[in-house]
Image (tube, rainbow, N blue to C red; front, top):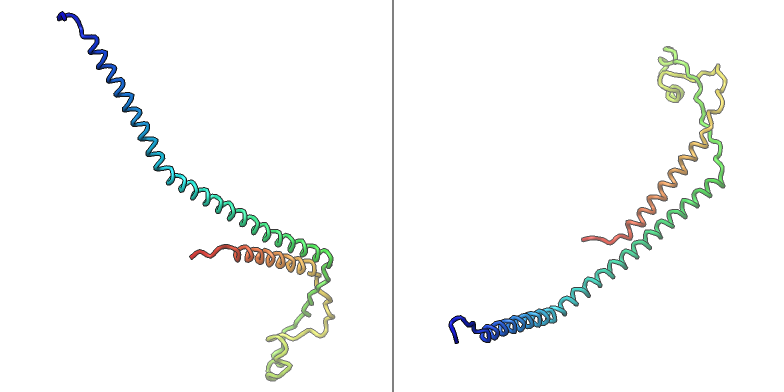
Length: 173
């Protein structure tokens, strides 16, 4: 062997051994990763099953809530429809207010006569005017009055529907 000659055979064996060692190390790491994944697989499956069960429970709860809201809303709409039909079937009756007759101030002599049943019935210091005729009926307020009644019925129906909705909510403790 001359000093200028390289030992190519030895270098080839060293490089080949290093390549084989790297491949074996890589295979060992891959197999270890597979082994670790296989050991973690039951825990991952259990986590996925829990997530799927939660999703299914949530889906059923949302579906039930939608059905409950639809039922309450349908009841409210039915009640409003009934109120509209009832209001349309019953025309507003005439409701008139009585007008008060004009009053004249009481004289000092009448007031000094003393308190009696007639004096107590009249307003304080006023007597009904006997000379003036009856002023007649007042304006018709029937339409406005029945409109207010219909509005009150709609508000009561809305409150009833909201109470039905709230009664179905779960109680948090």
